[in-house]
Image (cartoon, rainbow, N blue to C red; front, side, top):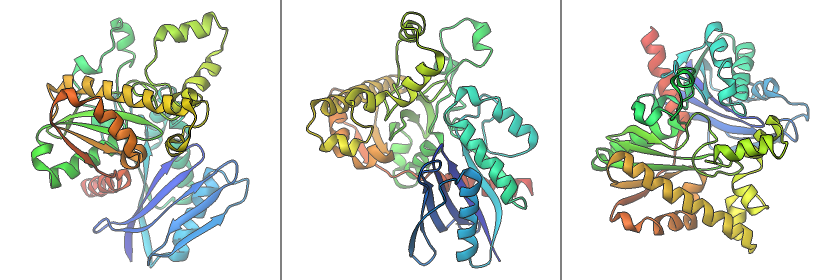
Length: 370
C-alpha cells in the first residue's frame, strides 16, 4: 500500500491535480481538466511517463471532473491509498494563517469569505464539497494563498480608512502566497546569500503580483484585500482610482455586477489591447494596441518593483516566476530596462511549484495531528 496526497487547484472552468507519494513527495500522477462547462477535456502525465488526453461529457461539472480524476487514479495506481485531498483556497481572511483540516465549521467560515474573492473562492470550495462526497475516507486539508503574508506590519496591511471599517476586515491581505513560499524555499536551498537579502519576487501570469521578501519572509506585496489590486493582469485592471469606480456606478449608470465583470474579466491586457489576455499572442501581434498593452504592463510592474524596494530599504535581487515571468523574456527585459536606476541586483527565473508546497503542508499537518 502506497500512501498518497491528492492535491487539487480548482478554478471556475478547470481542475488541476497532482498525486504525491506521502513518503518522499515524489509526483506519481499529474494533469488537468479544462473547459468545465463548455468543452471539458482531461490531459495527464501517467506513471511511467506516458501521457493521456480525452474528452469528457459536455455536462461535466466539478463533481464529475473530480470523479474523472479519481477514476484515472484507480485505473493507473499501484495500490495507492489517498490519505488526504489537499485544496488551494485563495482567501483565508485574518483567521486562517496556516493550513487546516476541513470541518463543517471551517467550511462555514470559508464561505463567509466569498465576497473577498468572488471569482475564486466559490470554485475552491466546490472542489472541497466534491471531494467530501467522492473521497469520504480521506481527510480534506486547505492551504491558503493569503497565509504567507499574514505577518505583515500594520503599516503595510492597513488602508487609510476609519477604524470601524478597518475593524470589519477591510485591509491588505495579499495573495499568491503558496508560490512565494516555494520561491523562498528554493532561494534558501540554492541561493542562501540572496535568501538572506532583499528580494522582489514577480509572480507574473494571468494573475500577477509582486512580493517583497527580506530574509525569506514576506514584507509587502502588491495585491491587497482582493486579487484585483496591484499590477494589471490578464483580464483584471489592477490598481484603479476608487473614484473611477464611483463614477462608473453613479454617473455612467453601471450596476455593481457590471462593474465587477469589467474590472475582473474585461480589463488588464485584454482590455488594453482589445485583442486577448494571452501574452504569447500579444508578443506575436503587429497590432499597435498589443504593443501598448505589453508596454503598459511592463511599466506598471517596474513601478511596483520600486515600491517593493522601498518597503525593504533596497533590493538585492529579482526573481521571476509564473507563466509570463518564466516564459516571456521580452516582458522581463522591458521591466528590467526600466529598473537600471536601482543599480546592480541579481536576476533569476525560478519555476514555481504551489502543489508541492501544499503536499508538504499536508504531510506536516497530518503528522502533527497524530
